[in-house]
Image (cartoon, rainbow, N blue to C red):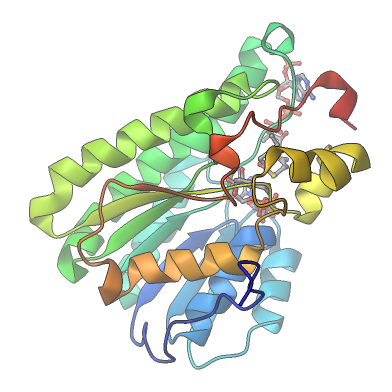
Amino acid sequence: MTAATTEPRVLASGTLDGLSALVTGAGSGIGRAVTQRLVQLGAHVTGLGRHEDSLKETGDLLDGPGGYDHRVCDVRDTEAAAAALVEVGESRGLGLLVNNAGGQFFAKALDISVNGWNSVLDLNLTSIFHLTKAAHPYLARTHGSVVNLSLSGVERGGMGMAHSIAARAGVLGLTRTLALEWATDGIRINCVGPGTVLTHALNDEASDHVLGNLVHKATPMQRPTPTADVAELVAFLASPAGALMTGQLLQIDGGAHLGAGLHMLPEAYR
Ligand SMILES: CCCCC/C=C/C(=O)SCCNC(=O)CCNC(=O)[C@H](O)C(C)(C)COP(=O)(O)OP(=O)(O)OC[C@H]1O[C@@H](n2cnc3c(N)ncnc32)[C@H](O)[C@@H]1OP(=O)(O)O
Ligand SMILES: NC(=O)C1=CN([C@@H]2O[C@H](COP(=O)(O)OP(=O)(O)OC[C@H]3O[C@@H](n4cnc5c(N)ncnc54)[C@H](OP(=O)(O)O)[C@@H]3O)[C@@H](O)[C@H]2O)C=CC1
């Protein structure tokens, strides 16, 4: 058997029967793959995002025994996002929050304005704090969990990503602090750090040179991270098999965090 297995789906059907989940950024990429897998395993997912068409498309692509609905919302509008979560919590309860919506533009620190810094921090850190806080009462009732999508290699830093790396380091600190503060409420909270995932969004941002060449060089296992692998890990953390896992950063990256890093040098930007 080779290490490069192409089928990461190992959890038994029915593993997440009855789970109510909220996934931010469910309309594309990793969030869509996570939604698909949770629904296959029996969960009901509410997908959150800014664009109705892509959220609807996620719903059209689902196959599985679980359920799906969506809410259009910008997670940086912390009151609107919390209100959407409360609606879900009050109507169906909440056993899992996946803070997946995120991203950044690639720029050297000296080229990041105050507004640019704030927009990335708001998206990748502040919104997560407020939404997770709003989820507390519902997760306490179900002894549920939170999964925060982060990046591989945050502790190493990454050129062109000062704002995003700072935000993700903040999310890890938040994750570990809430893991401590909420453990006795029965709530677990973890981070998943994917390596490079060739989603449309990244393809739009980075040049073919980065995606076709540097990813392989910067990744000991010489391949990008498939969305399905990330989705299985999120489902595992939400399942009874993850019941003692909290405060973790699980890097699913082919060893990329051990290497020199895939730095977004200016020549790599689109
Ligand atoms: C190392 C390689 C592996 C990478 C691993 C990570 C991969 C991924 O995350 S994949 C997803 C990739 N796609 C994205 O991340 C796209 C997501 N980006 C966005 O949604 C937006 O860029 C944003 C949310 C981060 C910012 O959006 P918004 O707040 O709407 O931005 P504005 O246009 O209003 O601009 C605000 C502010 O930011 C400045 N700015 C925007 N782009 C750049 C840039 N390329 N360089 C420098 N500054 C930029 C913009 O000028 C505004 O500032 P002011 O001009 O001072 O007002
Ligand atoms: N691709 C990669 O290589 C890696 C990605 N990651 C991280 O994983 C997460 C998902 O990435 P990926 O799937 O690639 O990215 P995508 O850009 O494909 O997905 C991000 C999703 O988040 C939604 N979103 C973005 N901003 C907001 C907002 N303000 N409010 C609500 N929803 C929003 C987008 O939908 P809409 O525009 O409709 O709102 C979109 O569906 C991100 O946090 C990303 O940084 C981590 C490691 C590597």
